[in-house]
Length: 169
Image (tube, rainbow, N blue to C red):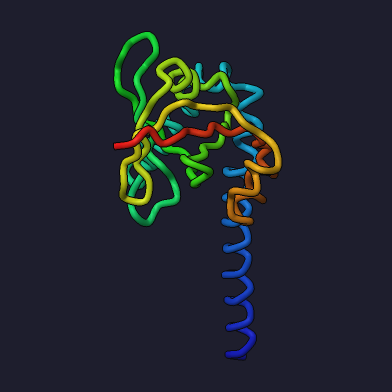
């Protein structure tokens, strides 16, 4: 009797873990695709906007730290001149860093960086002064990422990246 109860508990734990993995994959893979198609509709509604704001606030706290793979992009608004911070996946590439364009070229952070032609990225506990942004895509940019990230990027339909070059300190 005791063994069958352990097996049942083990199956329940496995089922919960599988469900959590499914939710994580949905969040990382399906959400960017769906968001790109329905951006204006989603951001005009209250509940999703509040959820996204809470997630972004949480991500800002861990981005750029030594243990996080996310970088914290600091950029100036192209119209307001206000300083903004955005959490993004970050990976070294060539003489700078590579940032994925998860929601396409219409995102504000991308347009702000392209207009200012410079920004700062905190990554792995260091801050880099970057500029000369280039929009790149293709196998060379994709292969710069570790295999686990490459799989998620492909599943999410992300093929475009911003290559930011080091400007010095």
